Image (tube, rainbow over all chains, first blue to last red; front, side):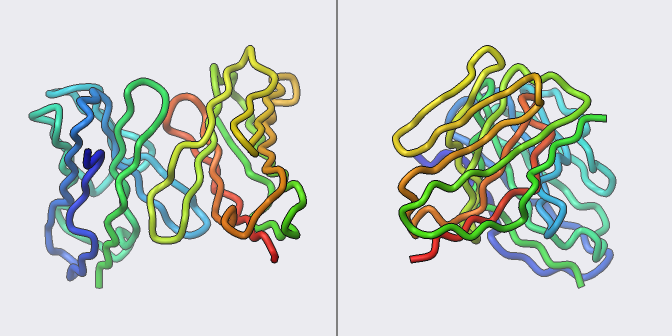
Length: 110
Length: 108
């Protein structure tokens, strides 16, 4: 049982490039979300989804897009990467209250 | 707006002693509060959930209390071990607000 799988684990981008962080879950949870974690800032919610076809913004959505075409997948897109988006990104799912996190994706924008 | 604070960035505890971490919140009345453990380079892992009508919850050497009057949760690790060294995060029930975490170091 893989749980929550994030790819890639590490990525270096140049300013202005675009990329997609992939997230897949095999727990059939309706709720999925993306967080970023920065030193001194803690975990901050970027976007979340309560089911296929439904997405909403979290605390820090600017510069990120999401879509939810299936229950299993919730990709996070950076349209034009900026150095301020250098961070660790965590995908998460939830059956109701408890949150299950992926192992993280380390993104550096130079 | 909702706010959650873990009032120690880092805590050093001697092995065998009880470690106590604090989580305070304001401008909200959560139905429940959760605690997570995060090891370096890994994602947070769920430990315990305590509901508003529960004063205390235990799991092995872990104990969580929830005081809705003080708007505070305490997280205790008894008989602490070096393997308990990690960052501990608290979170309000809406999955949006996490504390910044407390780095716990258990000293052998």
